[in-house]
Image (cartoon, rainbow, N blue to C red):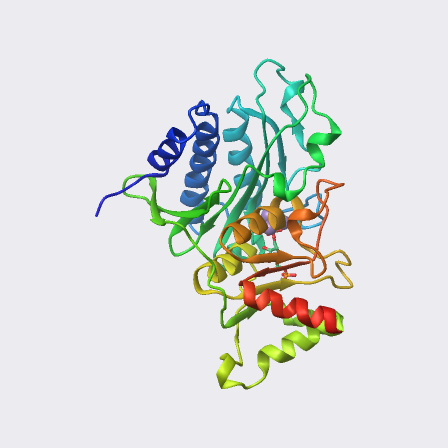
Length: 333
Ligand code: AHG
Ligand code: MN
Ligand code: MN
Ligand code: MN
């Protein structure tokens, strides 16, 4: 069986675009390096002083975990060294970093938004966690970034992906020409192509939602969750309920097996809990590239015009037929 590493795959893709000068390769190499460093820490978390909380809260109002800060540091550091980056934004920082202000001659055209460690509440319990990234090209051409650069919808992403630190560590990404998955082989320190041309099964048998919020959901969502529980052999119901509490892990399961994930708005999160720029947009890009759907319940996630870096949105994402069914309930109720 031949091995194709992530770098070999990217340079093969590069040959299809003669004008590409390897900039994107360097960007993904930086992300892959940081992912390998986080993989190493996650896999010995109990032995390294990397578990537990730091005792402070981040801009989200969440208690920051040591691994949140560790992962943020290494993704920031790796990306800042890539001269092709002009802007970096992380869940863990209130503001993005405009690199054009630091060195106007070195800053390139790529803007990267990332969630350095997704599923932080699960770290100490040794449950899968992840990293999510979203890449845009700046639109403005002057020295400094302009507002037009920050109001690009998710459809303008030039690439998006995630890393899942699970029973194996995988990097899954898309540049708009389908989705490919790479599994880290720690014995050679390389991400190797393991899931070429990933597609989300059109239907699945699991639904993923934090049922403790049930009383706060709309009638339509409540009706859909009842529908999932009804006994109907012909349509493989009742579906199984699976909720890991790490968005990347719940989403990746649905990518492989089919299924639907819902995080609707609640009293605590009237606009939804999940963040548009570095959770929902990148996963929506991947979902649509893999034949799935990602919606707020009313509109496609990728059509939202961003107004704030950390803005939140309701998210319903996964298998085409299952999300279309929720949309039917929303229209009806
Ligand atoms: P993060 O750890 O990056 O802050 O994200 C946590 C998110 C997401 O991973 C998960 O789907 C969701 O929080 C779980 O929220 P609840 O605990 O409210 O269900
Ligand atoms: Mn967080
Ligand atoms: Mn997250
Ligand atoms: Mn996070």
